[in-house]
Image 1 (cartoon, helix red, strand yellow):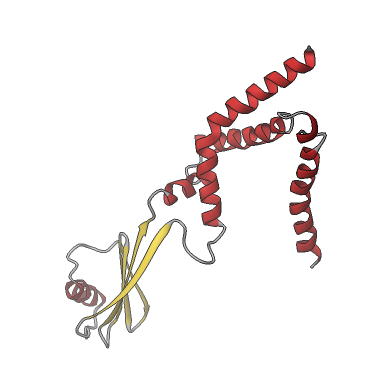
Image 2 (cartoon, rainbow, N blue to C red):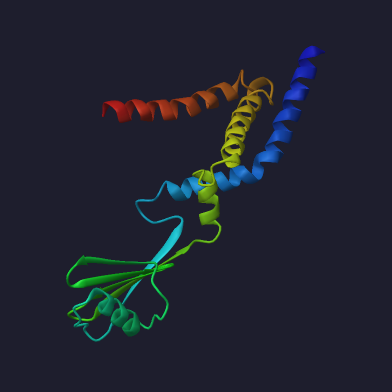
Length: 187
């Protein structure tokens, strides 16, 4: 009787906690796949570059160069920041846009950045950008993943449970990261 009761509560706990964490599991799964491939793309931002041509800027004073640069690219608003990486380049920073102007030639590189819908938000949660209370929510979520994994081991009985087929599959699941880690350390 006690074995039946223990298994019953294990299954209930596994099922109900699993339902509670399903949204976070999907969000973390999507984000995990996205951030695993940062060498191939930026999973949080879309970055676009384009070029344009303006007349060369032949001013000497810094403020005159900035004013003429803004006028020629068609921006009347003040930039957030201005940078002169060398005497022939002026870089104007606006929210979501950067203009790099080659002063003698008038060649301009415009870089635009905006967030990827949904991916930006799930990546922020996954990478714990909010900090504060979210840190404790993320820790609790990690603990519930451990709980769901451990209770899942004991949901099935018999030849498909942890004493049968489940033992072999669990062993494979443990062997893959261990084998990779050994290979990574000694290769």
